[in-house]
Length: 362
Image 1: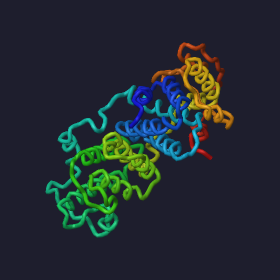
Image 2: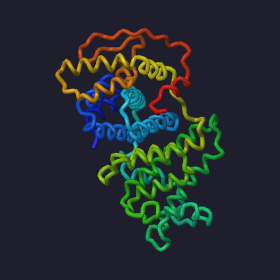
Image 3: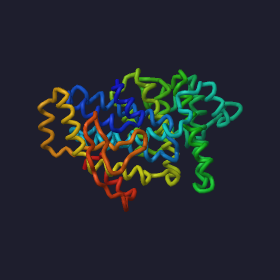
Image 4: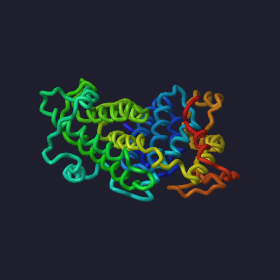
């Protein structure tokens, strides 16, 4: 399970509070709390997948990749945790600024109405030999009662992909946007139905979620982002986590459209880049300040954390913006401590800077 308070801070885009709390959790008991932190980051990635649009999908791809990197790395590098949490807060703020109807909210009946036009009125299709062969690992046996339905779902996914293939990003961006949302609705609908699909992709569990992951995996031609999102879905997975992590499936369906029309999605904008770069540069000062506050609060800090400090753990800083209101020239107060002054030149910053500021371990 995830850490509820940390989840809520990130969910609300509260960077300062998120960074303070994650530091406290690590200093209190790294071994005990690391799994809570990992599960929280995965849950936030899933939450973002419920609302992220094709226009912002690059940002989701970025944080999903960095979350998996953080989980797979065998050491805790505080700087990189701070950077990742900052980016997650920024992306969560997209929904705060412009709320929309998220996946997982509408009733299945309403969802059915939104996707019904993808399928023939007869609800009966016969996929050609090439398609059946391509999807053989996810299709149920041909004598299964869900074999026809499985073909119908694959038909619906492929019809969307075929429809967007010749669309122009400049002239048809709204159509691409609508198709991407419709694809997510399709995956939302069938992931919440109780239909069972016997398939080779997941021979031990016939839940529709595995059938749908299989479709995504094959349709994306093993594109990295689908595989990364799937690995996050599987991490410490139990059946009770299905609903909590379904947003990873839904976000990956938007990312599938992105693999076909990559230029439609934006990169980090100038304000976001400035913020991320600033946090990267003042991270060590912030970590030391948080650690001092925690020590003064009589928090029990493990000796191994002190040793980690000698390993050049570059640490990240909080910006002073709740949501995306940040003040570029200073770091705000933490727990009533004096403000840390910081002069920063924000000129000549490009999106290439963000590529250098990430949590991927070299």
